[in-house]
Every structure is written in C-alpha cells, then in structure tokens.
Image 1 (tube, rainbow over the protein chains, first blue to last red):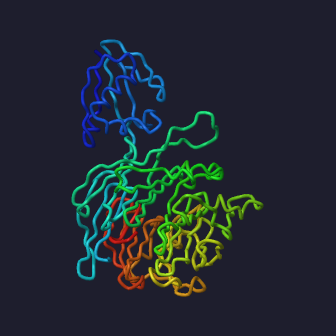
Image 2 (tube, each protein chain N blue to C red):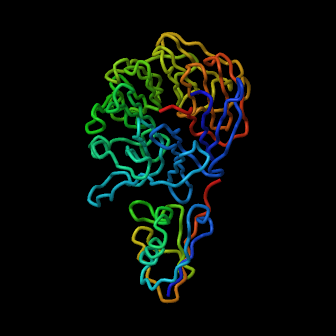
Image 3 (cartoon, rainbow over the protein chains, first blue to last red):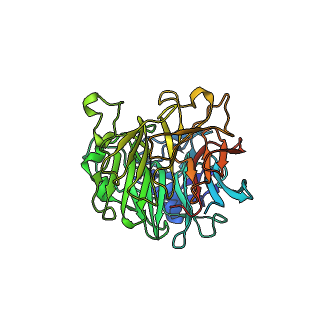
Length: 89
Length: 360
C-alpha cells in the first residue's frame, strides 16, 4: 500500500489524514485522502485540479513529474510527501 | 456605524474599536495569514473574511458573532477551463479583491477578473457568467498583478439590481438587471500608458478604485492610474479632475451623503509610488473637484514613504470619521473630516483594506 503524508503546516487549517492507499497513480492516492477530508482538496489542488503553485510532492524521494496530470505511477511501497514550498515572508 | 472597523493586513485581520474620541486595536484574527478583504456582517448575512494563503490558496471564512469566532465556508471557484481556447488567463482564483453586500446577497470581485455571487452567506458561490463570457473580458490585463481583477463593486442603494464595477485593467462596467447583462461605463477616461489611438478605449482603462456616493447614487468618483475622474450619471460619462500635488494615487473616499465631497491620497506618480516630497497629505474637495484643500495636520511630513492602497482610505457613515492605512503598516484616524489626524499604530503589517462596520 502506498503511504501518503501531508506537511504538518496544513494541520493549522484542516485535517490531514495519513493514508495507506492501493492507488496506482498519484492522483488516485490524493483522491483517497480527499475522500477522507473533502476540505483538503482545495488546499492542495486548485479548481482546475492542478497542484497549487506553492505546493510540491515527493514520491520515493523524487519530485513529481507533472503538476497538472498528477499521473506519476506508484508502487505498493511508495511513500508520498505533500510539502509546501519555501516561499513567503 | 463609526465605532468599529476592521483592518485587513498582510498578516492578519485586526479589529478597531472606538475608544472615546480615539480608537484602540482589538482582537486579531488569522494572525500571520494574508487577509485580502473583509466584509462586515449585516442582519441577513454573516461577516466574511477573504484569506490569500501563500501556499494553499484563497479561502473564505464567515463569522456570525462579529468576528469573535470564524468558520471556513466555500471559496469562489472558476469552472473547468476549455482546452481549445488559447490566450486566456488561467481560470484559477488568485485573490478576492473586493466584497460587497446587499441584503442577503454577497458579491465578490476577484483576480483574474471574475465576479461571484453568494445568496447563502458564502456557503456557495456562483460565477457571474454573463460578464465572464463577454468577449471584451479577454482584452483585460493585469495592473500590478499578472492577471486583471475586480477591485470595486459599487452597489446602488436605490436598486439592488444596479451596480458599477471597476476593473484593473478593464475599465468600468455596469448592470441594471442584477448582472444578467453588462455594458462598458468608462467613457471619458483616458489611459496615457496606451498608444494614442487607444487612449480613450473604455475596456482597458486602469481604474484603480471607484466609489459611489450613497446619498446621491448617480455620482461616482474614480481614482484612475492616470488621474481622477467623476461621473454624475452612473458612469455614462466621466469628467477629468485635476488635484494639487499629484492626481496619481490608488484610494478615494466619498462622502456618504454629499456628492461634492471626496478625499484622495496622492503619490508622486506611477513610477514612484511615495508621497510628494516625502510628506503625507490628503486632498479633499467640497465642490465636486473644482478646488481642493491639501490636509496635513497629524500626518508625517518628513521622511515618509507610505503608500495608501486602494481599499485603505475609508470614510464612515457620519461623513467625518476617516481611517487610513498604508503599505508600511501605519494607521491613522480623523474625527474631523480629515482636518487633523491621529496615528493609531506604526507597527501593523502592510495594510490591504479597511472597512467600517455597517458599510456595504
């Protein structure tokens, strides 16, 4: 089962479930988290379903390939980290 | 009401409470988060705060108890963007730039140029498609931002179906049927940042801020990128006005009853957005812009580089109480129509908007 972990920064705003998912792609895994907390979707994705500009995702240590398609393949042991970029001030 | 107001800043929303003849800062909400706009509540709608989280997008929060407690509500969202249309802005909410309320209806003006309506206190929002689908909308461009935006929503107290909106840079538009149909309302404005043959083109005027006189609703004032304009016929025709020091600025405050009286916060010019001679001043007219007084008492007159952004000069319902905030985080108040000012704080975050309680 792929494991999905969200940055602690999101916990200020909404619940961030840690998900173990049988998903085969990144988007499917994210959808399983959004099913557990629908409010989380708008914090991670914009209304076009793209990853927000200042959010990034690492899969097994590598940054995701496509911020719009979110179609990276997952393995049953994948670890996915949803992180915020270091911006702001 | 002029005994409570709200200061939306780059790092939180601050309550301002009348304290005798002065003011004191009250509760802070959303500390650390950018609050781009706030709409005080009314009998049939909650108070709303629009956040622009740096990483996690725009969010709306509502309060039913005057800002004591908040709950997240829906955020305006653009529909799925057609893939076969090139050259359009991304259909993604960038910022809520203006909020206005009329009875139980809330209007939200946004970057990248969509107007939204909620009739359930922010629980859901509907894009005003009739404006968004106008072909002219594709000609709008950003002024200070990458994308255009609606910064002014001037409701008409006589008729909830009538409003004028200001767009940067997309001129002024008006509706008389609750947003079902729209027409340009920027004739007379001039843009010297465009080639000469396009200078009077209504659809790309950079209105920085438009305000309506509630007591004489056909009168509108506009602080434009290239100067000051005024209309006495609900935006059918705009007349240019020249102010002392500089006619450049972002904000205009309009007297709630007297259509001849307005206040402006001049800056040197678009390429140098600081007070003239490093001394902060307010221009006030009592005769519709024919003449101005330049008011300085209580405002810093040396080494001052404060800019008063478009939503940061506000007059209360009494026509005498004024609040002004700057991008430097300074906050001033006047109780005598701008004759004299008191500094309330020099240490706030950059101020993005000020609203009196009870305003629309």
